[in-house]
Length: 165
Image 1 (cartoon, rainbow, N blue to C red):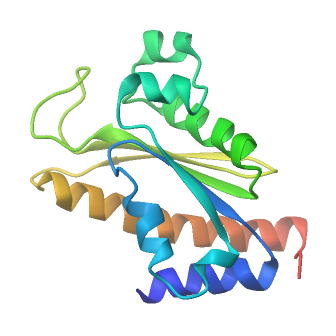
Image 2: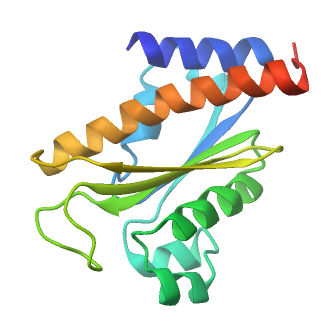
């Protein structure tokens, strides 16, 4: 909970808004953020695109990306983050797509997760592989990892591009 409070406080202090586009996490990231007092000042919303077609319908992921790379892919995670950032009109958007398990999906092993953070300045892709973990352990691990990653990106961009305080 401490890292969530840090993220909410950082965004509040810098007047930043965030959103998420979530597949395998099914809203877990946004739910965790919303559990923190003050989240309503920074969390604008979330798209839960668990079903493949919802990535196109809601997050406007190009059908060609899904056909060529699949939904468990870095290009899909990048598209999810960039399009949802535009749809939600936020400063930062985090996306989550992957295979929580228990079996292989799109020739990707259980525990393979792709994420991205889209900002006004850049899109940062992430790839994780968690072996030997349950579905919910994978989901929790990736949410925790991306909370930390988002804090780092915001701090890095604040130094590089200036604060909005």
